[in-house]
View 1 (cartoon, each protein chain N blue to C red):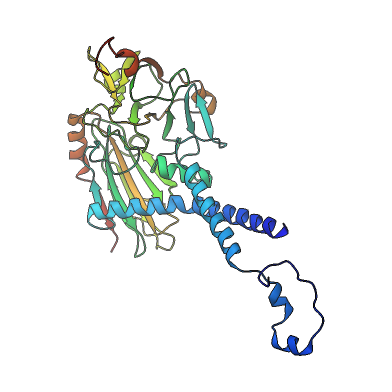
View 2: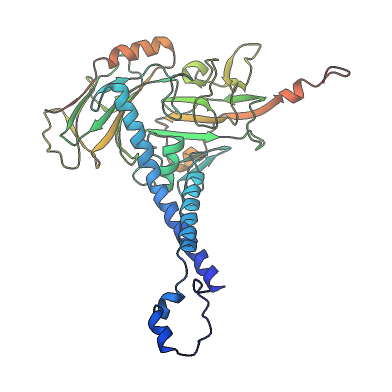
Amino acid sequence: MQDTLTPAPDPAPDPAASAATPPRRHQRRGPVWPWLLAVGFGLVAGAASAVAVSGGAIAAGGAGRLDAGRWSTDLTVGAAAAGPWVRARVARVGLLALPRSETVYFDRTADEAGQPLDPACTYAVSGGPLQTRWWSVTVYGADQMLVRNDDKAHSIDVTRAGGGPWQATLGPTRPAGGGLWLSTAGATAPILMVRLYNPKPSDDAALARLALPRVERVACATETAPAAPGGTP
Amino acid sequence: MRHWILLACAALAAAGVGHLVAIGLVPRVIMGVAMERVAEQAGGWNKLFHAPLVTASSQQIVRSSPDLAYSTCALDLTDGPVRFAFNRDAAGSYASVAIYGANTDAVFVRNDREMGADGLRLLIVGPRSPVAARPGEITVSVPSSKALVLVRRLAPDPDAFGRADAVRRDDSCMQVK
């Protein structure tokens, strides 16, 4: 077994044989392929982990993370102070975001009970005045793009909601009674994003106290349309 | 046994290197692709492109806002600076001009309330560009030879989009000859 690192028992010296075989140092060197395999596997696994941690929400567990209720943000977005992980995450989930001096972005993927937003469910979204020059709430899909449907209900903003308390519906079907609507039709795992342009004040404590919109589950398709007894399966 | 431990250590070290390299590359690669796409849409580098109303079918960039009218100019500062002119909306609607470096950092941001009545005039220079600003121009130094100007104008409905579109037609983005 000359291709392993396990040393073989020393044979009796044989001048003729030693002249015909390469130096012993070379015999002990193992094959290269396990090392190439290990390094290759490591590189791929490392790159895959980078891709994994850079997806999802804008805010992760970094030093810039700030929570306001179920909403979260990373305040270093777009800034030179952003670390490489924040930059990578922003490139994938919020490319060309503005820094906090101009805009603060909060997002959420769960309702008030902490349950992931379900595109088959209907939610009541409610909010009030926000001390910003302009705000909006937009719904995206898991691919970080506007949900691919023709409902023209991807967003609501202060110009539509008004300056006082407001209510909207988040769900797959247009509310029967009209009103503001964020459509999740065609989404897999909806993400809600609030944009706050020129929030005042914008220090960390004030942002953490913001009364951002609440998202409460009303009903889900499986709850609202139970199978009728004796009906077709 | 020692052999396997050494192999595992090599794999772990390679994983660390792979992770850090990939994390460093992700923003530059994605930004590079975005800039190429913007340049392609505009018909070349250093040319202004006014994006249509953002819809589910027209969106190009992750998390675009359907309430904003976007204009872009992909900058190539290799052969010299670029002059950029932004014009304000008389109605005072929100607008901003942001310039992003190749690593996704916003190196310059100014909104409509932070500029004069006639808007903003910028001379955007790269790492090795000579600086030759005109009176009234702001010089913006970008640490990379490629960069991106992104203009946002508030346009939450078709009428507002039409007004923003009329104003932005007077903006310009041109390489200094």
